[in-house]
Every structure is written in structure tokens, then in C-alpha cells.
Image (cartoon, rainbow, N blue to C red; front, side):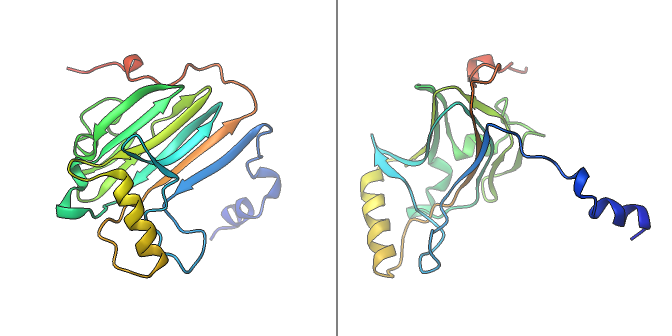
Length: 192
């Protein structure tokens, strides 16, 4: 490395500073202990959905990643991602629809991969003022409550799990309400 590049690496004054009133958070399928596998750690099953994140705001999701996941009979592409922002259902799309990258704002360059076999990555900023809930709705005949019971049983007893769902959601919580409005698909311009 050149002297200039090396100097930039050790320049403590040039490091980004933490913003006051902003807390960075992470919701994940990852286990909180090494003994458990890194999938399926949902918060709860509710109204037929598997809840992955439930945060009171104000805040903003800035990254969501749903890698390939295995479900009975390869049902992964038919699972529906649901985002409720400030009490309103704003996103209700199948993984297949999301990975098509054809529905704004979930298009390049803010969303990626474009192949249901690779999963789905979103960098779309999803602002919420009061509360944000992210969940999956499994396709019929699968039932969220049964999947959650089965996951708990297989995780507790080292059994084979038939449903493996992975996710990573990164978001921030603000001390005060941001000036930008909450995310809404209705505010997203349509193309075509």
C-alpha cells in the first residue's frame, strides 16, 4: 500500500462518527447461542404469519436479506413477505414477485439478485414513524403456527427441520421522528 492509503487506514479523526439519537439494530434468524442452528428463530406466529421483526419507531429499515430457504415441497417462491408500517400493510408480495425485480421500488440498483434461487436483497429505505412489523405468510396448506411448533421441537431436540427460513434485517431507530414520510407503496412511482 502507498503511504497515502496507509495513512487513511489509521486516521482515527477521519472515521465516521456515531450519530446521537440513532440506534442501529438487527433482526435475524440467527441463533443467540452456538448450540442452535441459524434459521427459524421467529418472534411469534400471529394471524397465520411468522413474525421476524416488530419494532416501535420512529425508524428505518435499510437492508433486508432473505437467502434461499427450504420449505416443504419447495414452497419458498410462494411465501409472501408482508411489511406493516405504522399499522398499514404496505408490502404484500411473494418471494417470486420480489425476486423478479419488476415492482418499484424493489428494482435495481436498490434490490438485487433477480433469481428466486439466490434469494432477495433490498436496500430500499423503509421509514416508519410508529411501528414496523416484517413477517412471512406461508402458502397453503402450510400453517404458521404449525411451522413454529415444528421449528421449536426440532431445535429443542436436534431433530431434522423440514422448514428452514433465514433472514437478516438491519434497521435504525431514531430518537425523534424523521422529516420524511413513512414508506408507502402508494408513494412509489410506477414505470411503464
